[in-house]
Amino acid sequence: MLELYLDSANLADIENLSHALPLAGVTTNPTIMAASGMSVNRLLPAMTEILGDEARFHVQVISNTADNIIAEAHKLHELPFDIVVKIPAHTAGLSAIKQLKKDGVPLLATAIYNLQQGMLAALNGADYLAPYVNRIDHLGVDGIQVVGDLQSFINQYQLPSKLLVASFKNVHQVLQVLSHGVRAVTLPIDIARQFLTTPATDTAVEKFSQDWHAAFADRLSYED
Image (cartoon, rainbow, N blue to C red; front, side):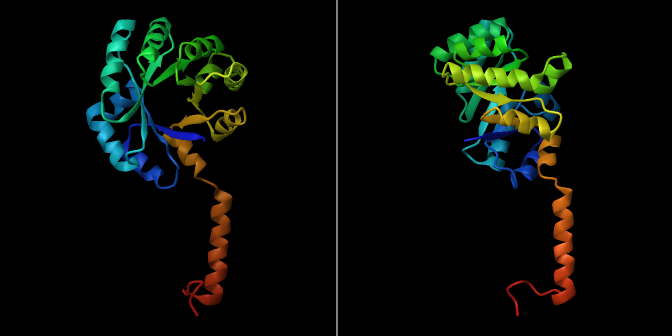
């Protein structure tokens, strides 16, 4: 089952897009949260009202030392929502992931820029791995290839980790990572809107409408 998320904390955008997109939930990070001006305790109830009780929220820690990350992750885990705790895949984060996995906290290793980061996070027990496709490209490395290699690593060693790929510049990148068997993606609002925009379809629908109204005026298809 493919999981589709919005990478946003803008409630108006989330509500608008939720009517057409089959959303599993929302991903956030400290930058996104800061832009919203809302704390987790305000934001998650509001998003639950929009998406329903089954929605999953990926919420990132602010702490940067292993001990503090662990403590913050437990606090987030105690909240009455389906929360996956996002932890950066640096040294302190990997240490925290290894411990938190033993404690049964759902985890996402985020800010993955290379294959080895993803490998270590998966082996330490992260439930989700978030490679940043477009940001990897900006480093002069093929982000799609990194995603493909990481998915192959997971498949080869039959690891339970699931890629939740982030950082896209266009729809084509999203479709490319999905072709590698990726099972979750998170879309920024602009890319989500691009998914719902097909000018050729709009043109066809307008032609259908013109032809119908020319023949039958304002009658509907089931009316005599």
